[in-house]
Image (cartoon, rainbow, N blue to C red; front, side, top):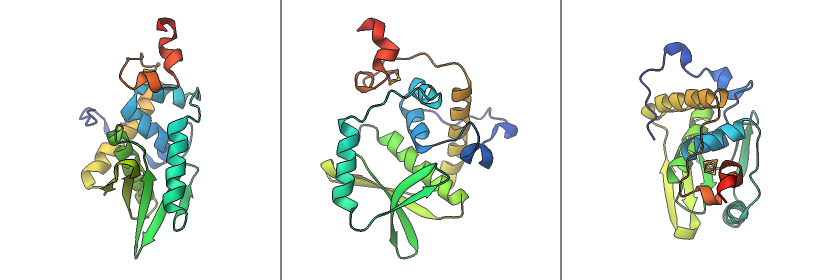
Length: 188
Ligand code: SF4
């Protein structure tokens, strides 16, 4: 997904208040949905939440409890960030547990958003995404370029949420999506 948007005017750049407060609170879920499906992002942003506690979520929670129950704590800030972390010396390492790598890009940007958000609060951190079922982990560091890209993502999320619902486009992930009937019910 192309997130570089050279046409953004300066006044369209995300402002800190837009990120943490007001009607357009940007949460990690919204960042994830931005990279998965703009229709899903729009529906979620309008509180049309059909997502159920399905198996993947439950498996993810169980994986997390099994792996980190002894040494992790949770950071919750502004009701926007809620993520487990482990302190290693002077560094805070955020942890996310994911079941599969199929949404890798979305997972990566969600973690980058957490790092970006914490940095805006003066908290330096790095991230680690764990895929225990395939014994892989990805270490995430917020680079300068990521920060400007993230500003574009935040602005884009805001524009999508404030606009008309993007038309659903069927992809391989749709059949597993809780909004499937909403989007394609007449085709079932
Ligand atoms: S069913 Fe497909 S198009 Fe509709 S919200 Fe879900 S992922 Fe997006």
